[in-house]
Length: 424
Ligand code: GDP
Image 1 (cartoon, rainbow, N blue to C red):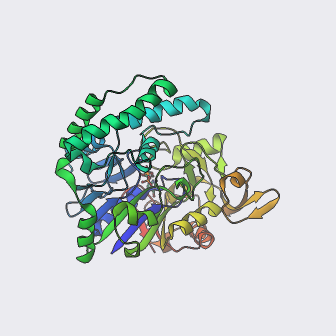
Image 2 (tube, rainbow, N blue to C red; image 1 turned 120 degrees about the vertical axis):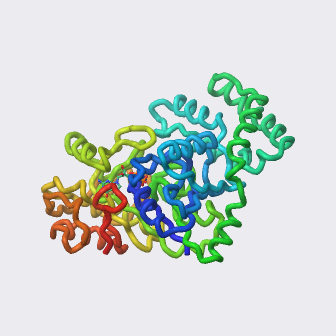
Image 3 (cartoon, rainbow, N blue to C red; image 1 turned 90 degrees about the vertical axis):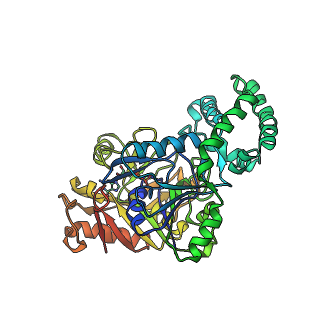
């Protein structure tokens, strides 16, 4: 059985926690897209961890963690992340890396920085992890597949060929130092030695696992609104964040994905630039940011303060629909206990007309939020274990959201720890 855990919004919905939790009943956990550009925060018996590249299942003895072919693989980063876990007492995780995953090259990160610098104020707010240059090269067919590390002659020749083009850009477009082919080749040989113990045909491994009726979990990064096709293009990421892409980025048949758990945050937050209709500002935003998440809403990778907003039912219904959500986990609800009333964005007013359907980016730029206000519950709910024991106004909020997003909310997360979850 294959389950996917994906985000309905801009990311940071708490997918890491839900993956860590459902990892307990999974055999294999797969990252299928993205790279080390976003982070998942996980709190368990070993401590608090911010994972960037590893799947959130690495803490269990019984799970195999896979870096799928769809991922932007930063090899030194992977090794650093594995070491940082082991150094803190986590048992050495079982990790497999797809022989078809492509490699984040040192120059991808440089090009990411240089391009943001060139764009200045018009930049995309990239995390400068090399993601956009990486995926550009993959689809321009000048990327490096892990398997290619193991063929010396091919590798050497390809490095020379690719660097010819890169050096023209570096010299004439960015006015930066040129790259040396011999040095990059040497770096790649180092990468080969680092990654060799993990490399295998992970699509075949997954085929066998599915045949043996193992439970497989696909862990998405970011959310629907950062998808290059269905998100707020161009302020999106460079690989698909949708559950459907899990089939490609892991190498499994699409019909095997039976359960799509969409993680939805009880309010909105976003990092980087881009349209955000229900965004709030000033003291109101500062207070939510300070109280939000676990110790404040600041990026797990960059430490940047997240942009804050009220729950956006228009964006989230769309987010769930495009994911094909079969169920929803509503997270960080505990944070909202301080509010007298909770505005929920139930429509967008565009050119004087109200719509409930999430529009294309150009329309989105003109959208003004239409709010419905719900009464607050004004208390702490972190210790609550049963749904029926939640304050009435809190249940009203959950049920209102459930109706708006047209997807059953099966889990309510009321704290950052693994056990802080209410199942309905
Ligand atoms: P991801 O990228 O979707 O995995 O999200 P992150 O892990 O980056 O962001 C979620 C943040 O919220 C982290 O700091 C989590 O520890 C925290 N978190 C997750 N669920 C809850 C919850 O129910 N309550 C609170 N207070 N924090 C939560």
